[in-house]
Amino acid sequence: MNLPVASAVTHVLPMPTDGTMAPHIDLGELQAELEGVATEALHARRAGLSLLEAVWDPRYPGLREFHQGIRDALFVEIPQEFEPWARAATSSRGDARFDGMQRTLFSFARARAEDDLSALQAALAELLVFEAVRLRLLVTALGSAEFELLGGEESDVDAIAWAEVGALLHRDELSDPEVRPLTVILAAANVALARDAAERAHELRSSGDDFREELRMRARLRAALRELRLPEAVLLENALSALLGGDRRELVDLQAERPVALDGMSRQAMDQRVSRGRRSLTHPRASWPRRRRPALFDLLRDTSV
Image (tube, rainbow, N blue to C red):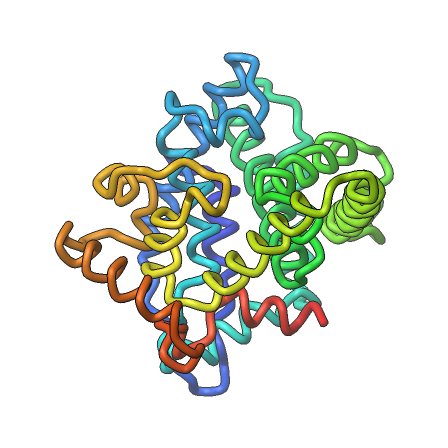
């Protein structure tokens, strides 16, 4: 099977023309992965689930891994030789290829599913639109202290992104050739994020000092963890889950759920990183296991300023 939308996505990846090295990308493997998640997205749609529900449903492991994996990929350190390519990729929003990509995705996502192939195309395109909006919104939300200080969670970002995609994807106005549809939805999602923050701030005025202090502590801790290398960030977030209001996972389960961060690590290696990480957080920041190289999150946050 060859989904044209998967092919279009993989072939729009920016390759620098200034002589800098671009990373080797197995386009066939990437297309196969996109086709696999398209199948699960279509099955979920036919079962009556929204993508917001399906990406966390254990019946769709490919969707779950894709959704969590691209989030974690935001925080992977970029090797020095790949940084020029990554900077080109994160600064290509005005590139004609990416404008064309927006229209391609929206054309497929809005198309009527007259057969299985077109249904798969629509399901994949809708997923990619949702993930694109969600990732940019995550950068905005997590790039500032305010969102988490007000009690916002990453799941809230997912919900806001999906609400705006659902509300705007099929609006006739977005088919206007002068309109950049993804840009419009992202702008609407940012407005919704700001509105959500204002509502949270209003509600917090009537809450107790202890609750507000708990939110501040969690926000500071999460911000600190995002400065660390991805494996340490994931492992310490799990180890400190009681402080962060989450559930602690067994390391073998955590590794299966977060392969981008933990794939290939032994149980002993994970235990050692947790122990060293706990100790380092009690010392000045210079001794923390922080990222030595920028991640996509850092580059995207910089371009958002």
